[in-house]
Amino acid sequence: DGGITQSPKYLFRKEGQNVTLSCEQNLNHDAMYWYRQDPGQGLRLIYYSQIVNDFQKGDIAEGYSVSREKKESFPLTVTSAQKNPTAFYLCASTHPSVGTNTEAFFGQGTRLTVV
Amino acid sequence: GENVEQHPSTLSVQEGDSAVIKCTYSDSASNYFPWYKQELGKRPQLIIDIRSNVGEKKDQRIAVTLNKTAKHFSLHITETQPEDSAVYFCAASIEGATNKLIFGTGTLLAVQP
Image (cartoon, each protein chain N blue to C red):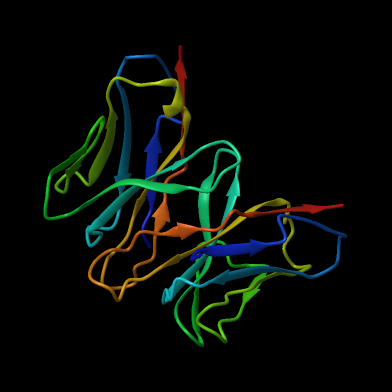
């Protein structure tokens, strides 16, 4: 059963703590992305990675970090430097090296709440 | 970098009417323009896309038009049904280069029965 999986679905964090969101895909996709979704602000790009061991900052990377040690995995760490981390986080993947189809497949999201 | 603006933010139509959502983009190098639908509590899913070598694409009740000169593209839904109610996002990217998808701010479409 191919797809992209995010875990956990709900996550609570105390102020001052780092927390890591998991994103795993078995679609053999090269590119992976993290987006943050807030009401009225759409999907804002945090980080993206086009290939293993390489990643680039998106529009709102401050306070976040990522790694891409394996093709299948692209974890996102929300650090204590992120001032307003409460949001819905979506991970996505695309396979740009196959023809020209760059449809993005999304995970089901992680809702992070700071308590 | 690329910036995508989307209007309106909310749209309410009667069942059977048409709905139009408009987006503009800033980077003239963008060549791939998908539209995603996100139902309440679910993940976004691709509903239609268009590339810069065509001006219009249709799929049953859904169509997308692209004006490269003006750098805007639109989603048209005809004969709307209650199940069309969702948030719709447009996006733009430079396919074959960064492939980075930049999304608009979304449109909440409500179809009234």
